[in-house]
Length: 403
Ligand SMILES: Cc1cc2nc3c(=O)[nH]c(=O)nc-3n(C[C@H](O)[C@H](O)[C@H](O)COP(=O)(O)OP(=O)(O)OC[C@H]3O[C@@H](n4cnc5c(N)ncnc54)[C@H](O)[C@@H]3O)c2cc1C
Image 1 (cartoon, rainbow, N blue to C red):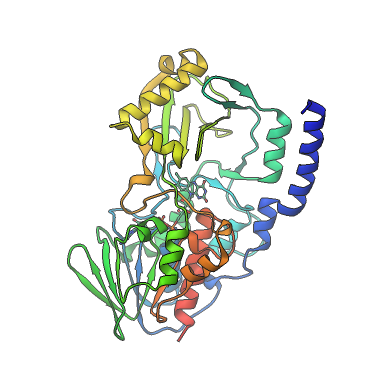
Image 2: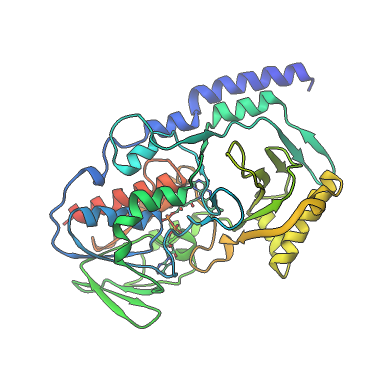
């Protein structure tokens, strides 16, 4: 196809796509007018939340606001789940889990329960200017037209001097963190009787009237938690049907910035991108990220150590940039391997891409005693952190109002 016809096809596609599917606009339409944060509840029972990620913390905030008796059982020694920040590598904080705001910025107000359209957070529009593709042999510049098209179709943003972790910490976690019982992996939830008994790996048993499970779909797939009675066929089918890809994020520090805004690597399956983490930040440090998901991450899992993964990334960058990477690499890096964390077991899911019937089964409570929240239970089609938080508000509202 000649260049002219390609441009015509792209213009046509752009009209269709921006008109029908404009990501943020569509996501904006799906936002609820109000959430459980804006309501009040008079529930007298005891609630246990399993997991202190974005969804669990959000649900807890509603319980805290309404003076409801609750406890959060968290498997690890920290809160945030797939939200985590690093301050050791650069002169700005770096999200080593969720990083981009995929939804319209107004979502931040909804998540905080703030009225109005004015956003307090300083954001960077993620409108890339210099991007390339790399297929293992050819390094090719992407046209500005394509960069503009991508931004128009999927207008994302990032926090300027902050992180997703900070946003959730300041607006949600600070209010509830005193109720988190850390290092308490839940292994069994028994809801056969009137009360629910929740057992942890340490052998402790906690009693509640209702339980909200917010662990990732990867943890549900791993059967780490035994449900008594067992989950029904529909729910198991839905859990198995949802794809939850492995992946990792590697952040590396360099003395010079020799790379563009992003390099999209062509891979057999999954995604792989090198990207400038300091893009439009007021930063002196040069940090390049590598995000590998699905099949491309599994290729790296063949290596035996973190060092080998880092060496392989540096060698690939040397290939592209004639040895510039190893010349300027400071040796400092952080690698977070989400796909192999026992209490995460993957990266993310996009609820709106799944079958509606599966989502319905996942979201259904068990005997009105066990409820489910978390990114995959996002009924507002936001995906990522906003989806997880909104699912927490949505599920806790159901939990507190269903008799
Ligand atoms: C590398 C990466 C990049 C991402 N990028 C983005 C992005 O740019 N933008 C975006 O919006 N989203 C992004 N996401 C997705 C986003 O991080 C998630 O959607 C969101 O954080 C999920 O929150 P959650 O509460 O549903 O689940 P989680 O964060 O997984 O929280 C679940 C919690 O449950 C705990 N837990 C697990 N098992 C047990 C158990 N048995 N007992 C007790 N506790 C348990 C876990 O330790 C964890 O704290 C990214 C994710 C990854 C991994």
